Image (cartoon, rainbow, N blue to C red; front, side, top):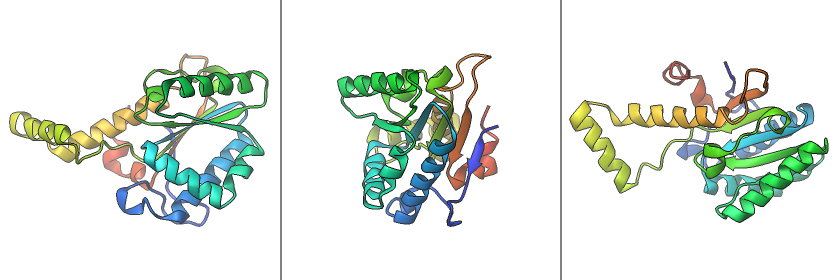
Length: 204
């Protein structure tokens, strides 16, 4: 089973749920958790955010609170962007840092291209951390129509499908690290919601 982190160093419950998105204390706790991980885990570390917007907002908080320099003391920092060429270059440099023994931290998106197709096997991924439960954007008209159809046709409740889909996406992120029977890495799920029975019971 993965390690589930429900509280930050100040014992405040951590979560990326919508109501908590503007809470600077939670963003700080996520940053300090990453600092702790990067100072103890060798080689490559990969961190997944629920969205580009949340990643950008969180990095801004880290910069303001001087958490970025703390991360850079232990590992070089790379991130996924919406530009495929930039992201490919960042991945190449991330792997180069791991190859030279320096180690690096890659910040990515749970529903981005990296989560769906890039392997962090061997020393490229000694730890993967998923920040938050990666739910879909529920105001999408396409998604709402799909939820209505599944409810009418198959009696599948919208919340049940959204939870299943979010945990499937989390599993996809986790699977980027363990790629063979000889591979190893730490898996951390950082959100108090992961500790609920309805979520824990749905992980493979």
